[in-house]
Length: 172
Image (tube, rainbow, N blue to C red; front, top):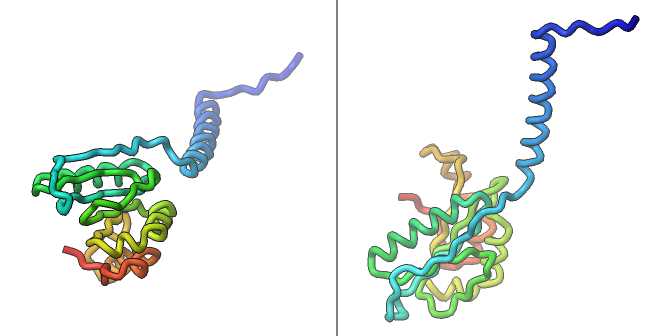
């Protein structure tokens, strides 16, 4: 005669719960290291024949939020009469023909994404030849205190020195 271990409902739920929690945590840990497949749209808003009014909004994203913000920035500029192209940095857009550039990046581990930093390095001369604006997308250091402001400014440390007309970060 074999002895079967008696499983009470409580023991069963406890065993399943611990196993499920361990599997979930392990799965989430793995999922957090993966880059999700994210749409990186390219847009052209309000085609304008005046070449001096054409602006490039380019961005680096991981989860898609920076792409959404780039589109919103483009819509605002287009509403003000500018012709705007929105292109992901990973497509390495050419800067010829633009009168200004807005460059945005998500923040990961306190820094701009590598492809955004590399874009600035590769196009440093062209970016310094036109007005440029930088944008960071993050959920940390959002307070108005000095520590948060300092941390936000530090996000640009890898790119600000390469752009001669980008001075200290000013917030409005």
